[in-house]
Structures are given as structure tokens and as C-alpha cells.
Image (cartoon, rainbow, N blue to C red; front, top):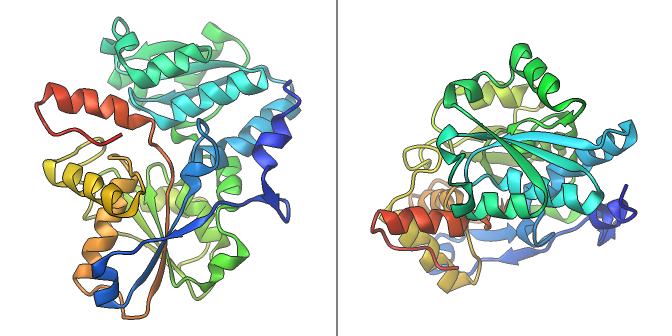
Length: 318
């Protein structure tokens, strides 16, 4: 196994934990409403194992190494940040990687997809499955079939979320973050927000911005947390996972021009749109200090731009 395993996941470190910087956001609306907003730049932890994927994979990879299992198997869609990060991490640490990819139609055109190109270039093999198969991927029968086809593997769930991932995400907040009143994060499968809730202070509220429609996430999050100082803000998914509008594109591009901070269209762009909309509508008391977690995901912009180009929509600035 790769000797640099601990070095990448534990360096740079402070008190044994990786530390990311908090960048202050300066916008007129924040001054007007007397709100302080910082973004924790988790996207800068690593160029390819970015943001919350860095946190989620840390203990999963260490566990696979401890068990002596040489193959990582995981799941994702066409532009999955998790698929890209797992492929790179696998190559870096000497694992074989298998990606179970949602959408049989991608089988003969995956090499037109920047995310899957990147994953393949880093050694990941793919199995493309129907959406019906994918919906049943957590059932025992599906897992048994995969074991018959591929042999022994260490299975990481879609989005990387399991107890090991939550353990990693508990390290996102540092002691200096206790000054904030609100911790905001985007939500996909619930692992990141669960870790943040677990490590949050009693006086803090953790606010999640789901990228998916539906009410199921609260139940999933409750599997990992016991605290009640959190809630989900469900009005900013822009129609569901992967859905994007001209308004959101314009917002992301404008935000980057004004702050120099890039956002992705699936997760962080929607979260930041939501935070600033809530601020504009006086949903936070003057004097509130907000820390928004940048969970990475920037690799997906190139793929999304291909989709936008085909729809004759404006592009996201790279």
C-alpha cells in the first residue's frame, strides 16, 4: 500500500487534524443586514480529493488498508464528485477501483464525459447499470451479484456516506469555528452534515441545503446524529438534483467575479444562493455570524458546461 497514505490525509495538520482556511465574504447585502459570512475553503484541501470527499474517504481508505482489501467499489452518476475522488485516491494509494455508474446509456459514450474520463484515466473500471438496478443497489441481492462478478471488495456507499465518512466529516470544524452562530452546508446523502452536527457546539445551528427533492434526508441524517440543533432548508434545490437555471448560472458567475470564490452548480452554488436569499429576506438576526462549508465539487463544472452548451444555455465560468 502507498506509503504516503497518512501524509496526504493528515497533512497539513494542527492538533492531529487537517485545517482549511476561512475566507470572509464581502458583499453589500452583508453590510446592509449586519451579517458576517465566511466560507470554509474545504475545496482547497486537495486538487483531486476535494472538499467533503477528502473527509469521507479518509477513514474508509484507512479501514480498507487495515483489512487488507485491495479493491474499492462505489457508486455514482455521470458527473459524480465521489466517483472522481475515489478513482484518484485509489490510484494514489494502490487500490483497484470499481465504479457502478447510473445510466446504461453511458456505456458507449463515457469517454465524452469529463468526470468519467478522469476516473478511467486514474484506473477505475466501470459497470453501467439501469436506473432500476441502481435504485436497488443497497439490497442484499444486488451486493451478492457484485461479489460474484468482481470478487472481494471494500464497498463504499453512494456519495461515500457511512459511519466512517461521518467520522471524517466531524473533523471539518476546528476550535476557532466555535465563534460562529450558524454553520451552513449543502446536503447530498447526509454524511457531511451529520459529521458537522456531531462536532457543532450547543449554541450553534447547523443549516443544511439539500440538492435533492424529498423529505427522506432527515431520516437518513438521524441515523448518525443525536443532537437537535439542525434543520434542512428545502427551498433552494432548483427543481432537484442536477437541475440548473439561467438564474443560478448568473448567480454563480457573479459570485465568483465579486468574491473570487468558485462554486459548483449542484451543491455549493445552490447553498450560497439560499444563504444570501435568506439574508436579503431578514431570516437572520443582525449580528449573526455564518460559516458556510465549501464542499468542493468543482470538477463537475466542465461536464455541466457540456450539458448547458447542448441546451444553448449560458456557461459557467471556469
